[in-house]
Structures are given as structure tokens and as C-alpha cells.
Amino acid sequence: MNRLRELSSQVMDVYQSLSQEFSAYQSSQSLNCVEKCGACCNNPDIEVSPLEMLPLALHLFDTGRAEQAFDELDSYSGFACKQYQRLSLDGKEGYCGIYEYRPGICRMFGAAGYKTKSGEATLSVCKPIKQAVPEKYAAALIAIQPQHLDIFEKRLVDDIAANSEVRVTSTKPPMIAEGRQKLAQLDYELGERLMPINDALRFVLEKILTLSFYAQDIDGGVAA
Ligand code: SF4
Ligand code: SF4
Image (tube, rainbow, N blue to C red; front, side, top):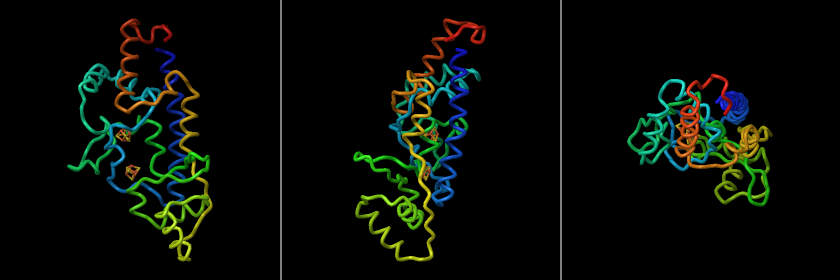
């Protein structure tokens, strides 16, 4: 268990730098999240590694809620991340109930770089941000000068290129794959495999509960 605690602390350190890096890019391109939006959380198929859920799982354990959380996840049949707190009936508005402990992908999603199948670096921006600030999205696309654009992107880029009022700053977006790699290299066993977010939390909670069952004094020098 001590090893898991140390690992969790390392994960939180990486989270801090990922949050700074990705939010700095979003701010620099004015591609910030839409107010009250939680559309990306309204989906149970968000893929994370169990490692990304370790800080939350340990927090639940330390506050005496691990077993309850495990049981609730076991019987959960909802269509969202279990941590998502909805504010609208359609689920598009809401907030994260565990913001401090949210996994890595939730710190990188929104506006970030990724590589296409052909290996070209390009920009991924979520639909709500694209729709809210299409001109900023187009400017960010121009800045990275991708070689291949779809029809929608090409039209936006052409429009924005003709608009001299929008400033284009050539900032490269941070890459999601590199962020994932920084986390995975902390522990390949827990960090390599991706699974749906609720399953990943359940997986790591089970590991912690099993360890605590066999080591009654979790901080009594029994290494996991
Ligand atoms: S952990 Fe929080 S930010 Fe991530 S998907 Fe769930 S509710 Fe959304
Ligand atoms: S990343 Fe996009 S979909 Fe997710 S909360 Fe922000 S604006 Fe909404």
C-alpha cells in the first residue's frame, strides 16, 4: 500500500504539470471550456488507465468510502462518468464531482494535439468549443499548419484567413499521447491498459480493498 501511496503522489505531480500545460495552451488560443458544459463527462466510455484513478481511489479509501463506492460502481448502469454531477436533463450541463482528483484525460481533453493515422500532428477540439468560438478554432488550426483538413475545417480556415482582425499565434498544442505516456511510465502495470472510466475506478478500488484486507495496518510497513 505504501508503494501505491507513493505512486499516487507521483501521479498528482504529473497532473499538476499537465493541467498547467494544457490549460495554458487553451487560454493562449482562447479555446477555453464553455461555461457549465459537461458534455464530455456525459459518456461512460471515456477511456483511462487504472493508474489515473488511483489518487481518487486512495482518497475514497482514506475517507472511509471505498467499499461504498465500489458497490455503487458494481451496480451502476448509468450512461455517464459516475463522478459527473448533472445540472440539466439532457446531461449536457454539469460539473465534475471530484475535480481535484480527475484523471489525466480530463485535464487534456478540450483542445489538444494528437497524431493522425498517417502520423501527422493535428488539433483536436471538442464540439462545444468549436461551436462556441469557430474563429478561434480556425485560427488555432492555421497556427499548426496541418497538411490535411476536412471540408468543414477548410471552410473555416479559408474564412479566417480572409479576416485580418483575428490574430494567429503559432503555438503548438500539447499532445495527448505524450501526456498519457508521462503517466504510463510511472507504472506500466497500472498505467498502460485503458478501460472505461467507471471500470478503471472499480478496478483500482478492488486492488486497494484487497490489499487492505490482507494488511490490516495499511501504513504499518507492509509494502504493496
Ligand atoms: S472524472 Fe470528472 S471531469 Fe472526468 S469525466 Fe468524470 S466527471 Fe468529467
Ligand atoms: S472539454 Fe468541451 S465538452 Fe468537455 S466540458 Fe469542456 S467544453 Fe464541454
